[in-house]
Image 1: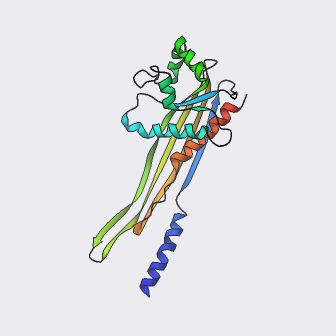
Image 2: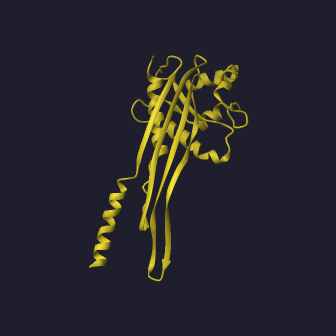
Image 3: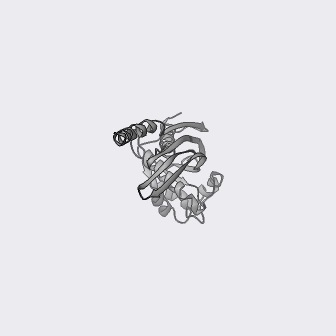
Length: 224
């Protein structure tokens, strides 16, 4: 009887704890410096900061996420893939020669050969994304043991992550900065363990990605 109750109550306990995890809070902000708007033939490209260390590979994935989201769903835009753009603009956006921040763009965009290629691509806006996702806090403990009678883990872990990204929008046609859009997301993940560890992960990074992409769509389409 005791064994039956233990096996019955375990799923119920896990289901109750699951309600604690997966909560994400996100905010977006924008600073507009000039009017924006897009024609049906206009395209955009989303780029990440160049010259980053190898540990920044996950940020390349974030840039791809923003690019995919802006090219799909409602109000989807014509998005040029980052690698396609880099190949078409060789050698100006290769890692060893690419600008490291937006302040370098005016001088770069003044090169006639580069301007001609951008016109061929129909590029209207260049979006420059910088930021990272970091673990900010963690607490709890988890212990796993193996005995002749079996194995199991017991404990409770919790950790928080913060995603903070900023996208600078460069108006290629007019050669000016259109503004900036930022996205911040925080969330807490949990891992309770009563014999079997069950992680409940807060989708912090994906939330920051979708929020940033949606706000960028609105920013570019809004002709103000």
